[in-house]
Length: 247
Image (cartoon, rainbow, N blue to C red; front, side, top):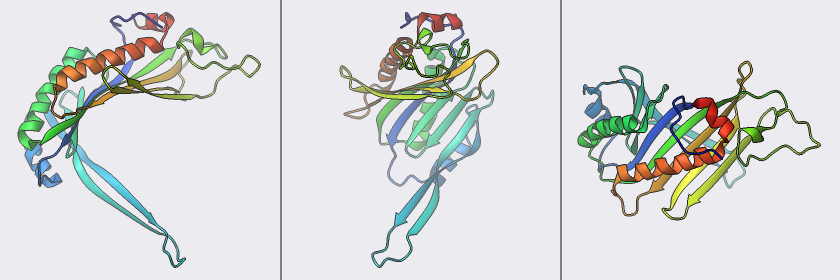
C-alpha cells in the first residue's frame, strides 16, 4: 500500500457527489423542468434524463410470453458553461460531477453546495436519505507485456506461476462495509481494453456511500468522512510505485 498524501497529478477522470432524496408530494418532471430551465446559475440544460422500465410475463394458458416497455423522463442533465461540471437534477436526487482536470475536494464541495442550494430552493425535497461520493481513476501503468501487476496494485490477485503471464483482461469488484460508521464502499478494478503505447490503463473505481438514518443528518460532514474512507481505499489499493507516477 502507499502512504496517503496529495498527488498533484492524480489520475482522476471523474469525481462526483450524489444525494438521494424523497421528493415533495406531487412533484413531476414537468414541474422540475419548469423550476430549473429558466434559471441562470451558470449551467445550461443539455438534455432530459430518462428511465426505462421493462416487463416480462408468462401467461398461464401457455401462450407466447408478453413483454412491455415504457420510458419516463425523471430529470435534467445540465452542464456548467465552462464544461467543467455536470449536474444531474432528478426527481429522486442530485448528482454533481467534476470532469478532468480534477482540482481539489474543497472546490468540488463548494460547487456542490452552490448548486444544491438551487436544487433545494426550487424543488423543496422532503428529506435526504443517502449521501455518496465516487472517484473514477485511470491508472496508466508503465508495464511491459507479461509483467506482474503486483508491482503497482497492492494485494491484487496474481496470475498462477505456471499459467501464461500476459493478462488480456480482468475485473475485480469488492463490496466493503466500514463497521464503525456503517458506510459502504464498492471498489472496482478493471483492465481497460483501450491501451496506449507503453501504458496499461487500469480503472480504479471507488464508490463510497451511506444511508442517513434518521434522514437529513449533516450531509457535508458525512461526505467529508466518505472522502476520507475513499482515500483509505485508494492508497490501500495502490503501491508506492503507482503513487510516484502522479507526484
